[in-house]
Image (cartoon, rainbow, N blue to C red):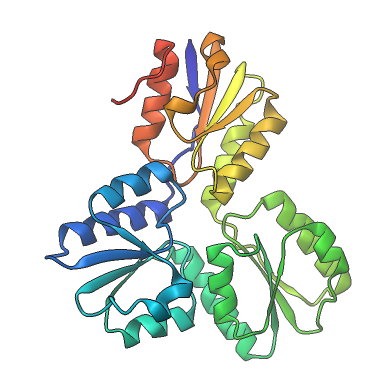
Length: 289
């Protein structure tokens, strides 16, 4: 079998930074317990590995009952970021905060704070209840609305003073459709295309695979927004597409194809990508490398 890799796949800068930060925090913990607010990234294999080293997951909504947190605790802010209210609670508990918020998400948070302070409504194109979107809303001080689809944009009453921000992992195609509708309603809306270049690069690299393989495998967490959208794009490129989290989930029929292309979401480590490639080449599931 021939396995073709997309030119760009796997870890993005923000995710790599968050994972390396967690590993360093665990290495340097000196007996302190290391926590992360929600899953550090949306990849079960990576999270299982970190949890086996002692990383614990906190629910941001339950911080009020987390009386066990204190000066002997290290809390990691994941790549998606969090709200100012949550940060204030953590400071009050005197925990050691390690901020792994993606720099691109930080920019959106600052924009939300700055524009909402000027009296503007911050329209966020993104997935409702996604950690990044919730965090940005927190910085908008109650002056925000989330739009997930072009249908929602069509029914939205756009305020006279508004700006549009995108979730960094949002669909570029959906964002364009939403922004066009909003600008038709109010041409004065300032649009910030804050979709991460890593998201667009992976989508564009996937498009280059069209016609080159019998099937496409997308590797990544099934609860990852960017991986899910990558899979949706794969289906438009090739009718034989599969979304898997690791090599154990490779569909049996994929081993019979002559050529398989692989790509991976921004929260997928090299080790899993390598494992999938090796399994395909050997015509069987390879448990570990």
